[in-house]
Amino acid sequence: MLKNTKNRLSRTLTKRHKIAIAGVGTLGAAALALSAVPGNAQTATAEAPTGKVAYSNEQIKDVKGNVTDQLASASVKAEEIAAKKAQEAAAKKAQEAAAKKKAAADAAAKKKAAAEAAKKKAEAERKAKEAASRSAKRVQVKQVAAKTYANNLDGWIREALDIMKKHNIPGTYNGLHKNIMRESSGNPNAINNWDINAQNGVPSIGLLQVIKPTFDAYHVPGTAWSQYDPVANLTAAANYAADRYGSIDNVNSAY
Image (cartoon, rainbow, N blue to C red; front, side, top):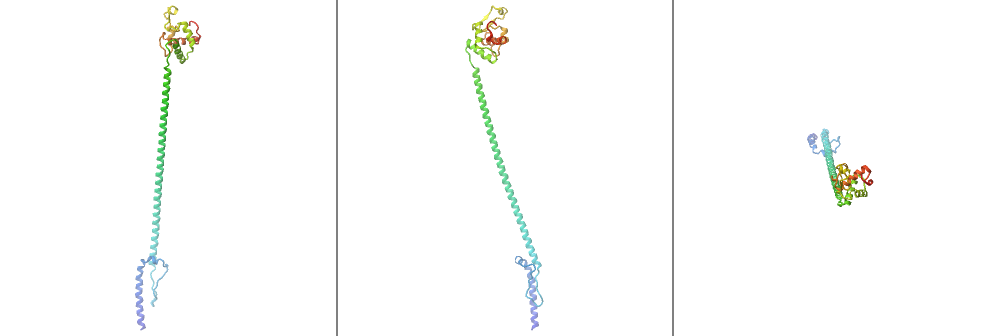
């Protein structure tokens, strides 16, 4: 009886052995659960008279290594994704900063252009005002130049004095008037046909009795080329008297 019991137990343990060995293949599916088991752990079945049954630790170690590698790879990928997102964010921020800078530059350029346009407009308006002012002054000058004189002895003397002033010819109203009255009594067509000048063919003519050679030599620009013209006669005679006597005011007799 005892011998038979021993044989049955031996066969039973051998079958369990096989089941345990076959069960090692399923450990890969339970890697996460088994990863908590210490590396040096051993699993044994009930002791049998024939000896101990041990599971292989190599497959468990391989599973743990694969899990560790997968976790490390996932960590690296997460870091790469985070770095890529950071780069994209930095690039976006740089683009926004560049766009803002360009917008500010465009606004500054528009402001500068507007300021230059306003400056040019103001300058144009200033020049227009200056031109208008010069035009107004010219009109005033023309109005002054258009001064009229009476067609009589008083008017002739006054016009002659204005022309003499422009040409720096000295003389006064009284100086001209007293010599006119002595020489021609105020007659612009007066002519001397009896003195030495007349005998020489160059009679004295006009208000101040000027001979032709003297008139031509001392003619004042802007006046008529005629001894009979009152203003031309007075200015030429005053010019001659200024050259010879210092002023028509210094002449008190025939000159």
